[in-house]
Image (tube, rainbow, N blue to C red; front, side):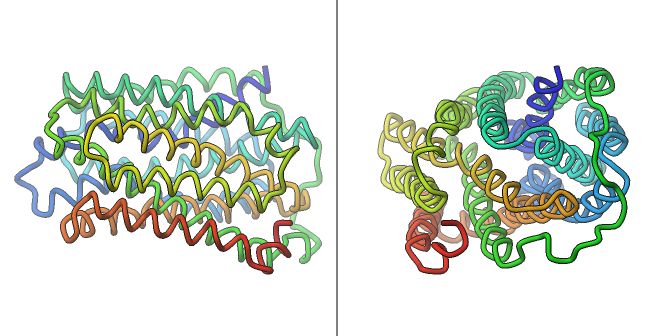
Length: 378
């Protein structure tokens, strides 16, 4: 039951943003009289990322000093209340405010969940669970993103009802999650967090999330540029990414046994680069599908690999701090993508924006050939 609950919890941070992506064009039409509506609506998707960045360091310190369970439960309640607010709010600014509070809730849920995985599981069991989380996140995202697209064709508000999942998970958390036996209080060691490694890994996490969410934010508008007004089709396109990510996550444990972290990262970014190149040159729907599948195959291994590397090298008393740093990097990238997605799409077009992303991914893949990468990740 505990394992099942931890897997369920791992889906909530990702659903917080991607789920409402098919509804973005509808939200734009509903608030079209607002100044800068194109930018503000994209912000609805990624504003939680900024507040995850703000809340993550505090959440990490709280769980290292006072424990995991109470913060997890309170964050889950806040998540349920704020995530569903879009169903009834009539102001774009109130909607943005609710999404900001949602970011604080996601910070608490994500950091406590990842840290509990490290507390409860070791070695192969930890790798297996991280892989299962990737599988479940992928497949549940397929269902929820597709459902969101269908619901968005009814109204832009209805996709927000998907977030009621949080209230279904809450009683399971109360029942199954207990505070792990561990030392609590102010960490006594200052050398337990690998600073050189985090200085290398955190920027990698930031860049990959920036590049990925530029795609997520622009994809519904790209679909419309290709001639389709269907939110269901946009949801299906996003579901392709999450489906391929889920399928490759099945192999995470086996792949990690066969290859070093360095080879894993080179392959992850290289395959994602191929996906972006296909999107750049796609002239027919079949090629768009191929590009999205390739992108998902690369992205599906990013978070399990990053988390396993970080958790395996972080001591117990600084684990919350390490996870908070990773969370900050990931969601700062997600938020920063909003600042890039709109201006880039307006300046050079969405298609060429994908080309810029492919160049960044190629450079990230090649960076793991360097001696510095070999020293840090092996």
